[in-house]
Length: 173
Image 1 (cartoon, rainbow, N blue to C red):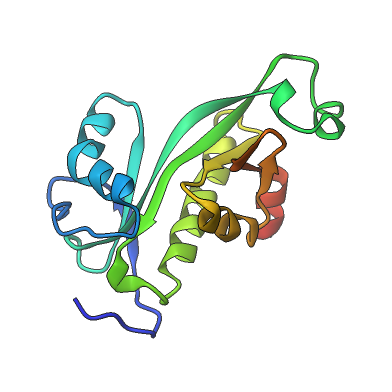
Image 2 (tube, rainbow, N blue to C red; image 1 turned 135 degrees about the vertical axis):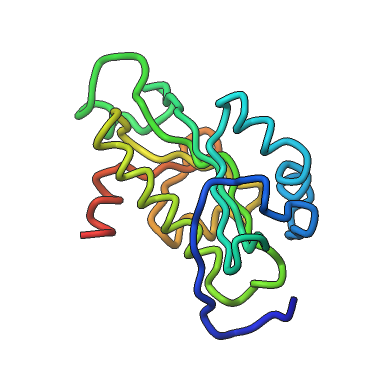
């Protein structure tokens, strides 16, 4: 597969048996291993919803996972929680994993993956409560990627970030 600097056209769909997981390669070995060995099991066990980005219905250009999540009130800045609730936990959605194939480096594929995930999170939040989207970057490069979209780091965990759904609504307004 040749890398191209022009913007490819993708579709997003749930991970299925026709997707070629074995051919997926990315910069983060743990994410690559997850897609190849664990993702289908997690879908079957309802642990994670896995979505793939593809051009042809077979080749996986990228993927992300979504799960329900809870944020402890004490984990986010007090100036935010003061306005929310006195409850100990706040409902959220977790983008547990997000990776794009190395062949699509420089094409904006990572941005497209995140935008589709955020759009899906926003849509789901209209059916089930979710105050924020949470991500956990694998390294500092990942935090830079998420912060450019407006994610904020949790005060006590620099690789764990969140974005309130209100901010995501504004992104798509």
